[in-house]
Amino acid sequence: MWVASVAADSLRSLDGVKLELDRRVTAIVGPNGAGKTNLVEAVYFGLTGRSFRTADRRDLIPFGASIARCRVVISGENDDPDHVFMASSSRGEGSRYTMDGAGIERSEAASYRPATTVFSPDRLELVKGPPSGRRAHVDSYIAARWPSRNELRRRFGRALAQRNALIARLREGGGDRSQLTTWNHQFAASGSELAAARDAAVRELGGFFTEAAADLGLDGETDLAYRPGSAIEADAIEAGLEERIENDLRLGRTSWGPHHDEIRLELDGRQLRRFGSQGQQRIGLLALLFAERSAILGSGANPPLMLLDDVMSELDGDRRGRLVGRLLDGGQSLITAAEPDLVPPVEGVRRIAIEELTAGAG
Ligand SMILES: Nc1ncnc2c1ncn2[C@@H]1O[C@H](COP(=O)(O)OP(=O)(O)OP(=O)(O)O)[C@@H](O)[C@H]1O
Ligand SMILES: [Mg+2]
Image 1 (cartoon, rainbow, N blue to C red):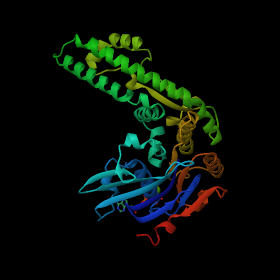
Image 2 (image 1 turned 45 degrees about the vertical axis):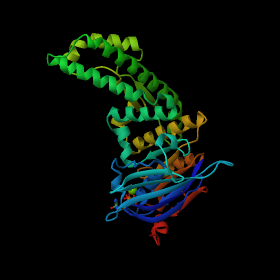
Image 3 (image 1 turned 30 degrees about the vertical axis):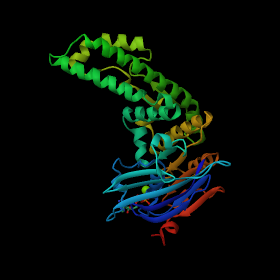
């Protein structure tokens, strides 16, 4: 299935804007402030009922208006019927998310629409920022790739919070020390499952990551590496917690465990986060997103729609060409660029000036 069209009836600066997407690559070109990111957000909002820019969906309501609303049409393969997804956010009535006119849960909707992968300049924080962002990203990839593992992160988070709460009480002289055994056990069981899933995900992605990075022109030896913050086996985690208990009681928190895991993007053995150039970090993030897409495709699932906002800046001409080549290899994507010259003039890319869409709309 693929996204046939989007109608941004009203969203931020967009008013009655309609776009038909190519089955392969659609490039939206136009100057700063013209509404390109808003259009990418409209596709994402229509598809998922959420925004990748903000947690507060009321931000999407055009200034001075009372409702934001987008519709997206999904076409199926062969005889599968089309589906229309609609998302809205209003000040008075909150949010609505429907398929073919009826309310639908996000989890259920996921099987009637393509998954999405988003690149935006803000997401470079994933490469440049602290490990917590990479952990969260890999955990949501795990949930998408193996739906049955979807609860692992939450379960571990709960065990960590409970153990920390008990440790804080013990430190203050309260609490019941015998309860620690129970929480150590729960922490180790859920932590071990989470660590094993991260290990499996990173192993599966590693080869695809290296391949995508080479393809996109990240010159050198690249690696995606999982560095556990504790251990993977439950017994080892439990034993490690017991060894460190005095230290934890002194600190008032759990000092060791999968909440200190790191997922590293490396170039020639060094972290892109610390030593990569802007362009290298950008390609590193793209390589990770492409690796996820390859793994999902390899599992037989529908490829995600790639939404790549402002993806060409900081890339040289050669690497812009490689990126478009990779996008043309398969799957559907929507990219934006502020300058027409940033989109390589190759066959197979549908190029649209944002002004064509916004002029006369409304
Ligand atoms: N809720 C809103 N209502 C109306 N306009 C908004 C709202 N939120 C943002 N805008 C405006 O939308 C305009 C277009 O923003 P957008 O981020 O889509 O531009 P862009 O084409 O992506 O530009 P750039 O190339 O700089 O990234 C901006 O002028 C912004 O002020
Ligand atoms: Mg933008």
